[in-house]
Image (tube, helix red, strand yellow):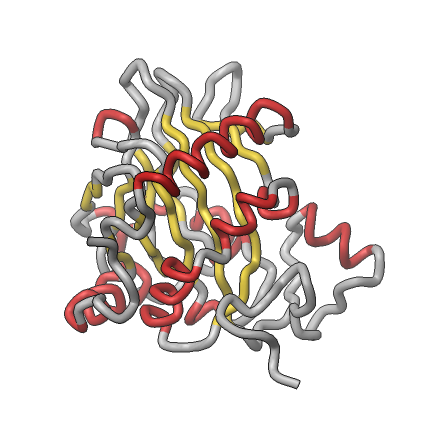
Length: 258
């Protein structure tokens, strides 16, 4: 049986708010996984990718704003089962901010521990969250996600560099870290301030996943140096302090109020 917002146990919602992350199994059917994986592989083959890694190393490659480059990726970003769960966990109306299509190749390095808030150019971060959708099985050896429960409740650091080297923070270093292996069609949801990472892919199989960031429905633009969003701002489409709305940032459940 597929999971839905209606069948989501209250304890799961409480655990999300306590720990800052939760694993929800079976949000996509096998047929949906096959459809979205087929499209994802096509998008990865044809679209420009951003490389994450230095000195010839690879952590992963990803297609930015995948929801703008594929009708199927947009449908996945706005999938009614996923978005309804996201709003139930957040406890507030949400908008779509962006989707990234991730490829962690064989023998790729671990993804560094970080949290997302500093890289997201919007206010309303207290209810901002990311859904991570597995399109293939992701055991520990394939680079599953790791989370630091409760780290979203810590005061955020004053320097952005500490957001990208989160395990170096004394208050985080000795907190437990939990690996969350998941099956294709499962999702994890995590708060924009929760510290998370991903292990190395030490298998012979590529890890393919999709992450979508959702933000408070009343979020406003806050410049942070995000190149793609700043390009919109430079074109006059975004103004600091003004709401992020319109076709690019739609409400995820229902139309915008008049």
